[in-house]
Amino acid sequence: MALKKILLAALAVTFVGTLAHAQAPNPRAAAEAAVKYRQSAYTVLGSNFGRLGGMVSGRAPFDAKQAQTFAERVAFMATIVPEAFPANSGPDSGVATKAKAELWANQADFQKLIKDMQDKTAALSTAAKSGDLDTIKAPFGAAAASCKACHDKYKLD
Image 1 (cartoon, rainbow, N blue to C red):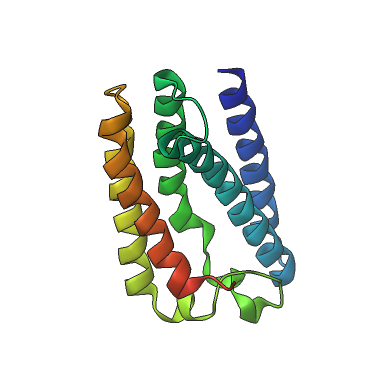
Image 2 (cartoon, rainbow, N blue to C red; image 1 turned 90 degrees about the vertical axis):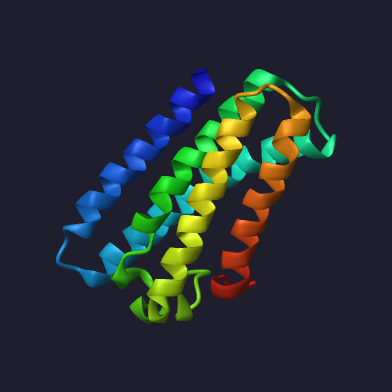
């Protein structure tokens, strides 16, 4: 529980800092803040997804309560992802990013992929509430596939 509070506090601090920078008249500072916010959000999402993945794959012991916590965090972080890609934060901003320019050019497709990820991570969170590893496996795979679909199209290697 303490880790959850620490992660959420860190994300809140990053968000507040991002808002302060986003209001700045310097477009580069706003883009840097947006990229930093995006990286922070994905760090929290990826860390929790990876820890749950360790359980699902058998690399880590299954703990039903932890699995539920990790899945809830992943689903919550998926709701933040759309706001992590403002128009001013792409490669044309001059700020280093792993996001391809096509992401901003194909917003309808990107938003469709994000919605799919949100749906799949919500289903994963629901499945994790069962406390049953076998019930979690299929939704975990579907959520992982939804992440991969977006990464394959819109993330630089």
